Length: 263
Image (cartoon, rainbow, N blue to C red; front, top):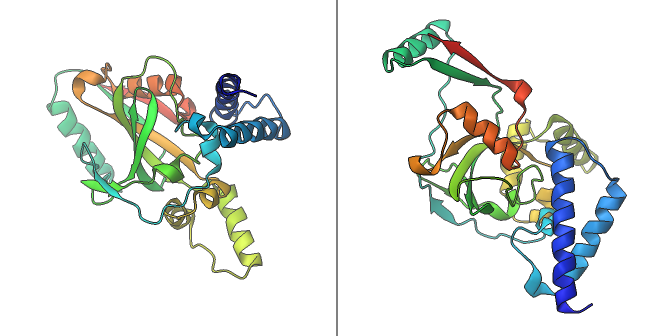
């Protein structure tokens, strides 16, 4: 196969694999078997090895890992990455609502979502492509974990639709219960120390040097907050931004979020 035909076939395979990834990991509606998917991926990897100059940073082949990261370089967050506050008191919640209502004369909408206790991550997209993934770090700068994040199949490497040209989306990388139990069962069989809980396992996994091992551990990610310069996010509400993010390819379960309006 010559280079031009290889370029066209790589583009075709990439489009198919991206679609199947979205169907399986985001929509939970697979349309081909695992074997058929693996055959498409194997063909893509062979072509990219034959023509390495055609390997793109957003290629579906990057999902399987393989790169080794010996040092995780730190980068500053463009916007502070603050931690969430906890509350176990109805009184504190009532006071918060009262403060919000006093700060505006408009109707207030609250978006209520499930809290996933994982590892905070910020994903930076430029022109629809995942450019960089950072840990929270100290809130002002975080470690670059882009190579490992690319192995998380529910995170799109290339967006679709009418996305802003430059924005960040933040959330939690976590260990699904079944994947966590499988990991600990495997470690028990090998006589290794078990992870205490899914959060510790996720934190340890996302900083592994071998991205192929990260891929094998089947992490997932819940993204719930968009951030950018005000003029670059054409949304009036947080809820609207979440609905848009779903159309761009991000995982978002509507049944886990709802709007409650208060006056």
